Every structure is written in C-alpha cells, then in structure tokens.
Image: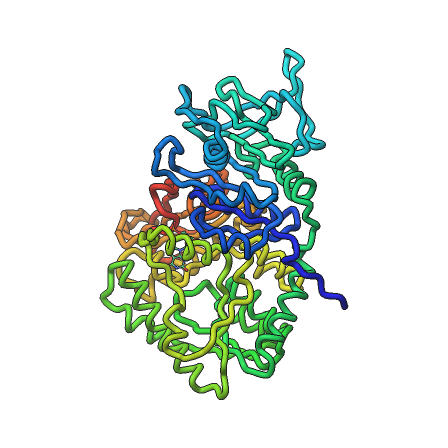
Length: 527
Ligand code: XMP
C-alpha cells in the first residue's frame, strides 16, 4: 500500500474574526484539500514554514477605515502564491496594495445579485442567470458596511452590484482575487465551485484530503508514535471519543484501554449501548465504572450551573485517575479533541478573549495529574470530517448520527439542584422525543434536540383531581457551528404527539412547553 501525503497540498486561511471563517475551511476540505486557519497576526516565518499553495483572507467584524484595524502580513503579497480576500480580507488587500475603501452609503446584508462585467478563471464553469437586460448575473450572499472605492494597479473589475461598484476584482497576473461577497456561505449560488476554482485551478492543488487516505495516514501515524506503549482513553459514547477509540484500536489493538464512566447523568440505556457496540461488536477493552453515587453525592445542594460543571469535571478526573492508576504501564492519554476546539484555544491565545460564558467541561486537568503524554488523533478534523472517518471505519450509523451531548450531561438540563428523580424523568422524555423525531425522519435534519427539566409546579387536572406537577421544556435547534442557532420550526402535529406522550407516559409532568428562542442571545442549553 502506497501511503499518500495528505498534507502535500495546503491552503492557509488568515482569520480576521469572521463568523464564517470555519466555513471557508470546511469548504476547502470538501473540495479535497487540507487547510489550516491561523490568526491574521501570525509572523511571516510561520507562513513561510507552512509553505501554502494559496492564501485566503477571511472576513472580519472590524472596519479597515479604522487606522488601527488588522492588516494581512505584507509578505503574502510578495511570495508568488495566489491570494483570495473575502469581504474584510478583500478590503485590507486593496488598501495594502494601493486602492481605497469607504464606508458604504447603503449597507448590504443578505442575498443580492452580482452582474458580471469581465471573465476570470475564478468563475470558470459558473453558470450565470440572465437578467431582463440581457446581463449575466449570479445570486450571492453579502454582509458588509464598508466597500472598495478604487482598485490597486494591476486589478480589473469582474463584477458589481447595484450598491457596490467592486463586488469581485482580480489581478490575473499575480493571481490575487477580491470578493465582497461570501462564496463559503451556501446562499451564494455555486460558491463551492468558486472555492474549487481557486484551490484546484488557480492554486494548482491536487485532491489528497479524502477520508480513506486520512484514515490510512492517521493509523500509520498512531502506530509510529505509540509503538509498543499502552494508551488509555475516556470513552463517552459521543462521536469524537468513539472515532478516536476505533482509530486507536485499528492502530494498536488491545494496547488501548477505554474507561467508560457512568455518572448517572447519561441518556436512557446509554451504558448498555456503549458496551454492546464497543465491547461486543468492536472487541475493545472497556472498563465500565459505575460512579453514579459519587457524582450525585458531590452535586447535593449545588444549584449554580458553573459550580455543577466544576464539580462534575473534578469528580470525573478523580474517578478516571483512580481507574487509570490501576492499569499497569500506561504511557499515553488519548483525547478526542477536534479542530474546532484547537481553533478556539489558538484564537483566544492571540486575542486574549477566552469564551467564559460557560466553562465547558473537558478533561484538561487529567494530564497534569497523571503524568502521561497526550495523543489527540483527530485534532485536525472538523466534526463533519470525524463523521466521514467514522463511516470509513465501519462505525454504526447510530453513533455517527448522534446529536452532541454535553460533558455534564443531564445536570445542566435540570435547572437548579440535580436529583436522581429528575434525571429519570428527563431520560424518559428525551427518549420519547428522539423516537418521534426518528419516525418523522427529522432527527438527522436537526442539530440538537433535548428536553429540560423545570423545577416548578404547574396545575393539571387528571380525572377529577387537581395536581401540581413538573414542567418540561422541549428544545430543538438548527445550527452550523453551535455558535449561533435558530429554534427549529417543528410541525405542530409532531409537537402535539410529543407533548401528549410526555404528559401521559411520564408520571409527574403536567405541562410541556416549546422553547422558541434563538442563539444569540439565548444559549442552546438552559444553563
Ligand atoms: P450553548 O449552550 O453554549 O451550547 O449555546 C453550545 C454547544 O455546547 C454544548 N455545551 C457543552 N458541552 N460541556 C460540554 O461538553 C458543557 O458544559 C457544555 N455547555 C454547552 C451544548 O450542548 C451545545 O452543543
């Protein structure tokens, strides 16, 4: 078997803080080419060392008109590789190369049409519509306040809109392109083809970032790195730790030991599912730790969500540590970190802005306590890529199609103090919801669906008696990256079935409400 170098061709994305930066990266990888996101202010040496075949400058929230706003490192315009600036990225490129930018009279947000003035390899094979005046047009997605008012020497106008004189510009000799619209957003017609033209035809990359090759590469890398050593992994049953487990198992077989901790805050029959899939089907070494009592004891009397997270995180570390110590001769601790986690921590190092809205539970405290080396096999992959790798590894659809489930589990879906009784109610409610969504073929179309336990009593009349029972809230969202989310417009008849079933089948529930808040400002979880 000849192993291909999956990193042979690569694109660098310099991030100016756009909400769409990760989307650019995902699109490039969909095209079959590796790419990396780095902050706009990295030093030139890093860029030269990365040796990209092309560079994309992302959009960003600032205004280039502000003198202190970010600029791209000047070297990128002199190293002889193609550069594509999107929105803010276009504007800074124009300014740095001698053009001008002004604040637009009319801001453009949402769908609009560009009118094509000249042809360019960037728009090769793009199928345009024709407007009533016989002009070629394309539907695109805009989101900007400033715009280019004059272009630098060597550039030509490719397309404009009614409000924006320079919607697409090109310097074909140098392979520099500026787009005021966002090709990475699906609302831009054939946006993926524009990105493909840049990556494949202009940067001359070949496709080497494909699941089969990624799997072969990762397995070989793990074998080389781990050798004859032993590895321990915390298996939660979620996609990331599951794919990490199977990859490691393929690389080092029974030198991998997984620790599955039942903290009493999991889905219905979760333990049985994990054991049957990973132990019985995949033949993995799994230590099943029943730690429910320890977690509930530690949570007694705690109402504050952040405190709950800290307590759960710290009990998890203690339990994991105790179990791992019982194993002999372990040198590595594997973690299912994915690329989004890495981007967030890299960005926060540069910007100094750490997302402290919710302290997300992770096992970051483990390595220090355990004196083990860390191995993170999927740290270069986005979630959708982890899924594709899972398919390639033959993992069951049931695991790969799961919605994300937070580390602190049901504890942050019970407002206030966590009690066993409430967890039992939520488990049943969730399982009814999931069952009905699957029947309606809606589970896979939604990003996250769950129920929340509201510890308030509301009246219901059952038979002839008045009862004061608990309230359940249903939360269903659609989201691209979980940074923003829309509440899902579920069909009324489905909501009716879910509500009926929850009230009739679960003792102690008087009322079901549907959460119709979007993020921002409401977060996805209630705590
Ligand atoms: P929010 O509620 O911040 O959620 O809009 C965004 C995503 O993060 C998940 N989430 C967590 N995941 N530990 C986790 O592992 C946590 O403490 C935590 N809090 C939120 C949430 O389920 C959603 O997918």
